[in-house]
Length: 269
Image 1 (cartoon, rainbow, N blue to C red):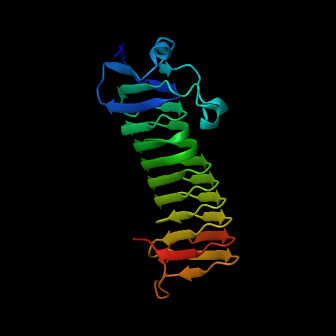
Image 2 (tube, rainbow, N blue to C red):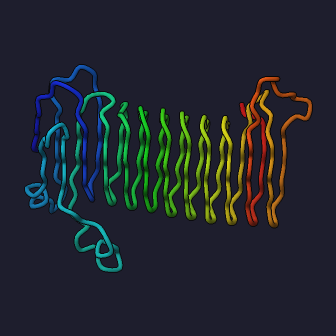
Image 3 (cartoon, one colour):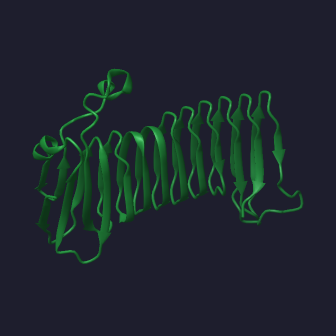
């Protein structure tokens, strides 16, 4: 089980490219060295030898040889998809990260800085991102508890769940579903056949779906200007009529359109 340690005296960045296996990134305060542990899976001896683990300036790089793509699919026998590495990295808290995988799940239980995360068909679980997030994936599930900045999301058939987003949310999904508990910035989201649920919005919202349902929660004491349409679905408002907005409250503009899905407006908890 190869171990690598790199002395550090200031902030660093992390850049990971690993097709198969798993990626775990832990963070800690007051680190004097960053560490990398690689555990090869079955038939991964050659892959381990070809994997670069090094500091390039202020960036800790872990790059396995490129894998993935059409020839990893089952219809072609998955000839190159059997070898994988389990990666465990420890870096300083709030380290910016760039992680790209194919089927390897990504786990970040600590706090990292701005993040760029991409995967083909896997899962990602992230606790906190102190900065902006860019996330792209084909299928699977991405769960992020908190993003202090803005989010750019693109997915095919995968689902994405957010806790709290401090900035704006820009999303494009095919058949995947989008869910966010709280969004403080502007929301612009497009879904093919997927659904979108926003538990509480504090900025303007522009949602559209081909056939998915849309749910939007509005905070108490905030005025909203609504432009809501559905082709063959229903529009349901659970907002109390006598809940007057605060005199200084800026109206939230809500634009929601769906072809055959339902639209639900409700009072945010």
